[in-house]
Each structure stands twice: as structure tokens, then as C-alpha cells.
Length: 201
Image 1: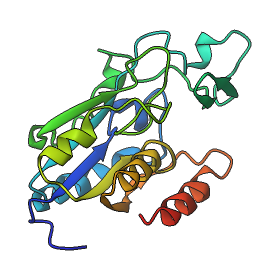
Image 2 (image 1 turned 90 degrees about the horizontal axis):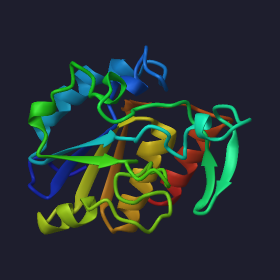
Image 3 (image 1 turned 45 degrees about the vertical axis):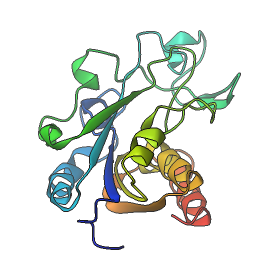
Image 4 (image 1 turned 90 degrees about the vertical axis):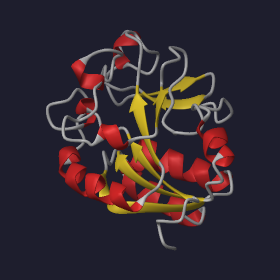
């Protein structure tokens, strides 16, 4: 990767929240172990973006919103297949807060996603209908960003979707897999790696 002091580079830190760390409602194994490395990496980037999963209570992606369904079941939603998750990252709760050790004061912008009760949003760039933008693409374009490095949680869902969308928008995309951790549902990690490689990430 080219010198990250170049202003055309941005670091995107995906969903490093209590909910995805040990003790959280949708804990990713070892999710908290990447925090020191992410903080150190921030020194190398002139632009830092944080994303935050920010669901209203009763979100349609929660298994609890579908009687008779269990967490990790698959359902068909109007926008396509959807994993049903345990209730997590509900707006204003400690579960939704950033990990206490994450250097959030370094961020230039925070993108909240998943706040629309009718649709989930894995990607930092688009909701899961693959069409509704979060605004991040425009934010980066206005600042002349041409390359992004992604870190955070989880490799096979929100990091993967964000990386694919960033590549689709024409950005040069790097995923620091040493600074991500995966859920790995039924081979989802290998599938995500294949998809990202196929997209030129």
C-alpha cells in the first residue's frame, strides 16, 4: 500500500462496540484484542471514520422480532436473505457504545447504520438493499479519498460488506485481517475472503 500519510487515504474502523466484544450481546471471539492495534494504526491516517451499529429496539433483523425463530436462522426479507441476530447494539445502550479503550476522539466522522427498523445495514456504505446510501461514499469523495483501509468487526459481515461496496465505488481497498475478527457462521469467513479477493480487495 502507498504511504498512508497521503491525504487520499482513510482508515475505516467498523463497529468496534461492546456488543461485538466479549460480554456483548453478539460477541465476536477475541473482538476486543484488536483495539490496541487499531489505536496505533490511527497515527498513520489523515482521515479516520468510525461506524456504529445503531438499532432501534425491535429491529426487523432481531430473531426476537420473528415469533418461532431463533438467532442465526435465515429468513427472506423484501431486500433478500437476512440472518436473524440476537438483539444487539440497541440505540443508547451500553451494548451499542464503542469499546472503552477505542480512541474515539481521533475520529473525524461517525457513521451510524442499522437505524432503519425495516432493513439491516452491514456495510458502512449501503444498507442491505444494496441501494440506500449511508452518506459515507459522498463524504470520502468530497475529501478526495481514493484508498481506504478497513479494520474492525466482524470480518465476514460488516467488514466484508463494507470492503465490497468500497471496491464497487472505485476505491482502492485494503483489509487488515490482523485487525479484524470473524463470527464465521457456516463457513462465512472463507466465503467473505473469496468475495473480497474476487473484488480486488
